[in-house]
Every structure is written in structure tokens, then in C-alpha cells.
Amino acid sequence: MNKKMCIRALIASVIAFSVTARADLPSMEDPSRGKGSGIMDTLKNYGYDMVILMSLAICAVGFLVVANSCIATYAEIQNGRKAWKDLGAMAGVGAILLVITIWLLTQAGEVL
Image (cartoon, rainbow, N blue to C red; front, side, top):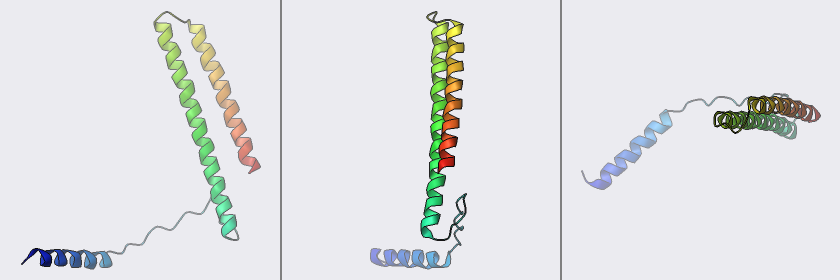
């Protein structure tokens, strides 16, 4: 058997197995606001879900920034450059900013 015959046999077997191995794909999930009456309503509802997901990502990044700055302040406390009150102030202001961010993004989600 030469090289061309082997390649043809391999291609034929791949095609034969791919035709017989048809699996049903899962159906697409409807958006949280419902499917809508037409394609434009459905796309608007998917857009709403994407905006809500992005606002969740913004809140997560804000939490990471506050946590990082608190860790950096704690490291400066260990080096003697800052006091414990600075860490408390950083955590308090960060928590207030996170609450305000979550509240504003929730209000923006209701406007949509």
C-alpha cells in the first residue's frame, strides 16, 4: 500500500465516522427577560444580560482593587511607614465605594 492509498483511507474513515457521530447540540438559553416577540426584542434582551454581566465584572474588579490596596497598606504597616488607622480608613472608604458602585450599577440596570 502506498502513501496515497493510506491518506485516502484515512480521509474516508474520518468522513465516515464524522457522519455517524452526530450529537444533538444543547438548545440556546433564553435571555433573563424572556425571548421577546421578534429577533430585535430577543437581541435587546441578550444585550441587557451582557450589560448586567459587565456591571458584575466592574464590581468584581472594584473589589479586587480595594483588596489590593488594603494588602499594600498592611505591608506598609509591617514596614513601619503607616499606622493601623490607615488600614481601617482604607478598608472603610473602600467598602463605602463598593456599596456606592453596586448601588449605582443596580440603578443603571433598572433604567435599561
